[in-house]
Amino acid sequence: MHKGFEVGPQAASEIPEFIVRHTTMRQLQIFEAIVRHGSFTRAAEELFLTQPTVSMQTKKLTDAFGLPLLMQVGRQVRPTEAGEVVYSTIREMFTSLNNLDVALSEIQGLKRGRLRLAVVSTAKYLAPELLGKFNELYPNIELSLKVSNRDRVIERMANHEDDLYIMGQVAHEFDEVEVHPFAPNPLVVIAPKTHPLAARSEISLAELAEYPFILREPGSGIRDATLRVFDAAGIEPKIKMELGSNEAIKHAVLAGLGLSVLSLHSMTLEGPQGPLGLLNVSGFPIMRQWFIVHPKGRMLSLVAKSFLEFAISEQARMRDSMADQWPAVFADERA
Image (cartoon, helix red, strand yellow):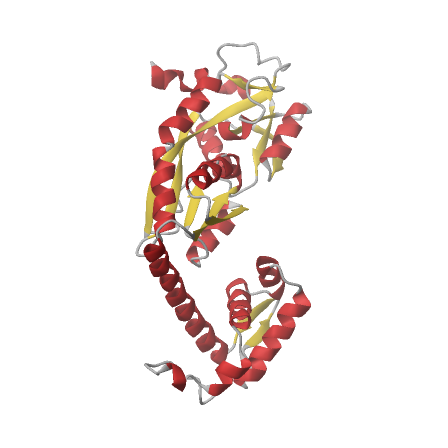
């Protein structure tokens, strides 16, 4: 490693000259993203940069340190020994800067600041509403919403990329997480209103299994919960298709390709007046919860704490709003 690059209790004036003159915060951010993703392409996508820009800035950083920082291993990019040290130091520095941001936000109160929220794809139906109402209370807060599949959200949480995370199935991969249930997330069986089962008041799981079924992709929490219901009954559904999008599934169901199970939240825009209806199937709805999650020990900013408290306070209103639209789904709770 460059002989001037040492981590220790140096005064600001003792920061190695080559770091001050020849590196930028953007270069460090790019390098951190490349190592974390193992890819120039994914780093460029995350930072909204072109790949040539990412490559050029990485070369400048490498030239500044005077040692190779990255190497190609198969199809992935890995840090060299020097790169590991640089990456570790950058992560520590970014953590310190985040803590500085939190401390300054505490001083400023809720007059300004930012909230970074990452949610699983189905949560895109409720997160904007929550953020909109939060924005009405605190209009000067900068808001960021990332929507991705569950695996990517878990990856983001492991890398501390956001303040809070919303998911419908708590990440069992992490022992050290704080979990806050805040809203109902019923999983319902959907069909076209013209389907033969749509007029039935009671449908057994065995009857449902006689029809083609459309499932979310492997790894989906909705898929896992649906298959557990069938497995518990010793019944195997006729899986016709697998799709990675709730909207694609709704279109496929409407086209007569099969029945499916989705979160009730994915139906709220069309409402009961839409072309799809809910089937009254034994074992459904599956009454689940939405959770706001964050790693234990991570210092939450005042903005993040306020949003967490706000979201939890909205639980009753969100439940009542859904129950007004779909009273049959919540009939057992109201009985």
